[in-house]
Amino acid sequence: MGQPRTPVFSALAVALVFLAGSFSSADDLPISVPSAHPTAPVWGDPLEIPPPTIDKEEPEETPTVRIYDEEVPAEHDGVVYVIDVSGSMDYGATTYIGLEGDPTYGSRIDRAKVEVIRSLRALTEDMTFNILAYHCSLRAWRLDRVPATVENIAAATAWVRTLIARGGTATGPSTAVALDDRDVYLVALISDGAPNCGANGLYGHRVAISENNLQGAVIHTFGIGVHSSAETFMRVVASDSGGVYHAVEGS
Image 1 (tube, rainbow, N blue to C red):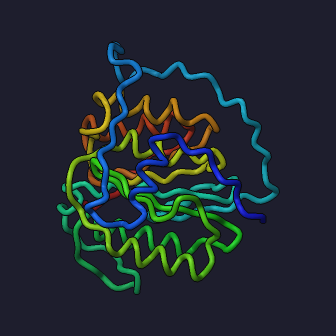
Image 2: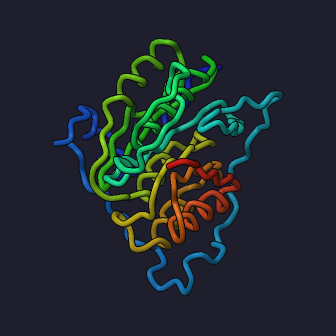
Image 3: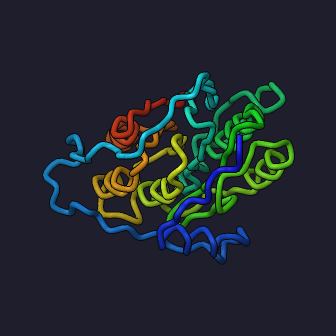
């Protein structure tokens, strides 16, 4: 397949991703997307968002992306991983299967990094990918998706290994930045808690995602040990886009 078209980034995406190019913590910038509906009565009610107007051609065979032992369809051969690296991701140490198939002990972020790397290694070269990592600021591995070549996967693996947990949880605006790539139709969102910065309440984070999903991308969410409102949030974000919520056990 050809190279993916360069997406039209919003001013937010350009500022955050370009300035994060050096990948140093000093370049992290705060994310702030105000709620579009600050007076919404119940944040968990279905959103009244018009269906996408962009037609999507169905491929003859649908490839899949595997993460946390779940297979999700990648109808347009591309995926963006959005990874929560907030401070709470450094907790919840447990035993899991490492990259070499051996029992490994580590925190939520340790396992998340292993699962993302394992998922990257399973991508075929005709697929494209990118990775965003967020707390109250956002870091991007690349400005755009790239082909899943051996070289790119190796470079992405090295970058993922450097991620550390700190700060709050700006899930809504961070996922919205991933959706600025109008040619991406699959987002894998990994988080362990309710969002608490970057938008006005849970509803504001939900709206930030849904109102920027103009292409109708499917968002599959992976909740690491989440409960109550955090789990509800992850479920409705997936449901809004036609995706599936996956509970990550043992965290």
